[in-house]
Image (tube, rainbow over all chains, first blue to last red; front, side, top):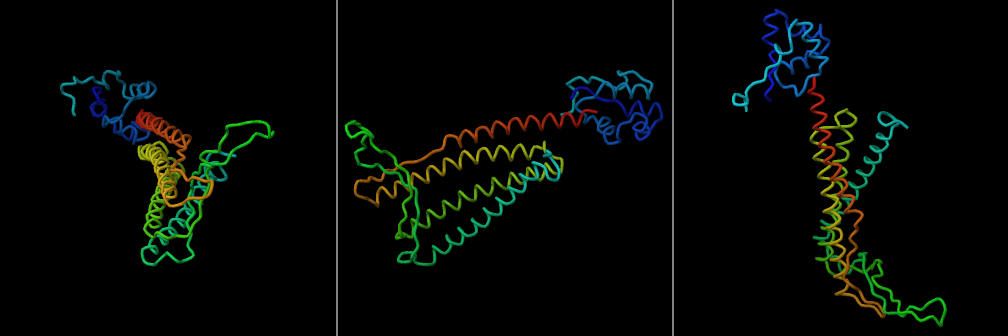
Length: 73
Length: 208
C-alpha cells in the first residue's frame, strides 16, 4: 500500500506509549497496533480525528504517501 | 424462531445435518462391508437380488377413452426398477463400488456443510475456507449428478443387453436432472458472493 502511517514517529515525539494512546482514543491496543504496523486497510475519519486530537498533530503528520518505486513488495 | 443460538433455525439445520451425516456414515459402512464381502463370497446362487432403474418402451397400442377415438399414442421411456438375482459377481461389485463412491461424495458434502455451520456457531462465518467449501459443494453437486446419470445409463444399458420381456423393450437411457445441475450452479454463484463477502469482512475488520 502507498499510504504509510507514521504513528510510531509521532508517538516518539510526544513521548506517549501506544497503550496510553489506545486508552485516550478509545481504540483497542490490537487495532492501534494494526494501524501502527501499516496492516490496516482503511481508517475512519472519526479515528483520525481522535488521534490528531490526542497527539496534537495534523493528519499529514500521521499519514504519508510513499512513492510506489520505494514501496515494499 | 431466532436466527442463531439455541432453538434457532441454524441449530435446527445443524441438527438435521448431523442426523443426515450419521445416517450416511452408517449406510456407507454397510455398503462398504457388502462390497468387501462381494470379493470373497460367491454371490451367484445365493438369494441376493439387485434392484436397478430401467427404462422401457412398451409396444402396446394406446387407445383413447372412447373406443372410436383413434390415437397414435405410444408409451415411451417408461421408468421403473428391475429386480433380478445376482448372476454376475463382477457387475455387482462394480455397481457397489460406484454407489460407494457416490455416497462418499454425499458424505463429503455433508461434512463440508457441518464445518460451515461449526464456524457459524463460533462467529467466524466469512472466512476464505468457507468460501472454498461452498465452491467445492457446488462442483460436487454438479459432478455428482452427472455421475449418477451416467451410472443410471450404464445400468439401463446392461439391462437392455441382458433382459427381454414380451411386449417390452429395455432401452439404454438416463435421467439427468437439470434442476440439480442448476442448483449446483446456484451454489457456485453463492460461493462467489460469499468470497466477496469474505473480502469485505476482512477489509471491514482492518478498518480502524
